[in-house]
Image 1 (cartoon, rainbow, N blue to C red):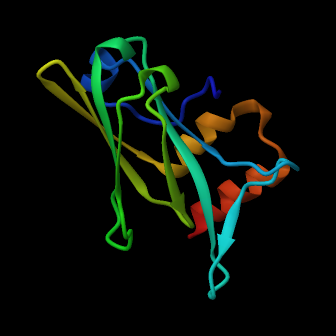
Image 2: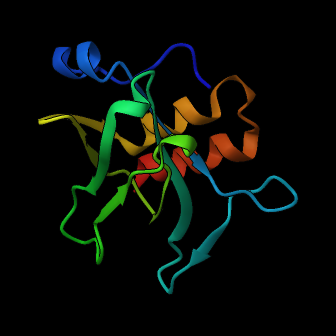
Length: 140
């Protein structure tokens, strides 16, 4: 995990959820990010997104929305506190991810760029091939 979190959390999210958003490329046996390439040469990466929070046992549900009109299925949900509210997405490029967390009767929202979440997830152990994949995400 990245100790220098690049995400600028809102005060409400930071104070109440006290969590960290992160994402990781799904990796093949050789440590290369998994992807499907389309006819335009764009790599659609398989990415696991997460929310880690010390309040996980109080969180009812986490909703991830890929805030881009080109997404066919832009919304994912997770109530899996044991696995950091894991959800799987596919993306070829940079997209704002809107994360909504329900704790009790309150809802907290945070927006983060996918590349920031990937930087958090891969952290200091980022290999050159993963750095390259993050750069591809940023450029598209």
